[in-house]
Image (cartoon, rainbow, N blue to C red; front, side, top):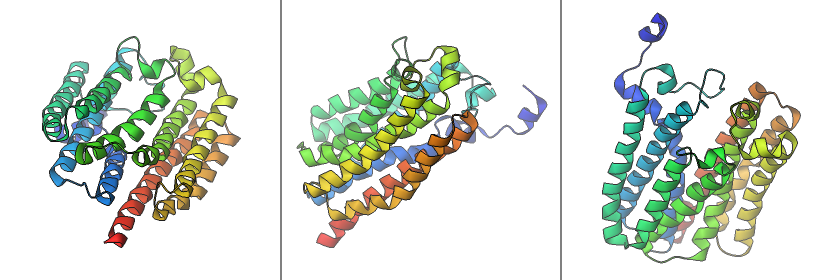
Length: 307
């Protein structure tokens, strides 16, 4: 390791916080808050169950990040030519064995806390948890890795949309309602769009290492149109479920983010340069975050206005 790297080596806590991408975990919290918001509106909110669900979701996501870094490193997808910021594994601050073990520790603790949720929410919750753990591992794990076979966007949509939102709601209310599923769709679509923006940026790199994403399968032009479609569908779905009466009008606060969505489209449309597309990726991630925050705020605002 270069001397400069040793001099700037963070503390162990900082290293592990970077390894689990602590700054990105807020995106995982949003769908939990969304499910909790609808539980509040439907008078089924339970504080301890909500807190336990939040902890489980964060741990599963953290473990998934660690497994992703381990398997990407193992498969040669995360090398010096990648535009993705260097993680502690690539930087040499953690060994592959430490990262892999850390992933299992996160999953194990999540399973233990999940046992409480199952005890109060019923065995159906076990299905939500099992799917989350499985998708988190199989995203890049094994030779059938979802991210390496064009299924990454679908997996992210399922997890960040219906799985977390509906799972959180069901753990407390113990009933499955259609309006909760519908309200999980817009944020899931934006999460998929953010991932697709990353895959679009990494298209040429992924082609070189043999990683099959939707972007490499579709090619640059069609992949760009897929990104535009995902963004458009997220807003159209939100408007549609409001018109149908399945979400309060305060959810339309999300429309404030439309200028950011349009700016994202403009950037991605005008270039195929990976470095320039990195800005489009950043805006896609920002859009997902702001849209989610406004959506959650709208749901909680509606609840407090009804009290």
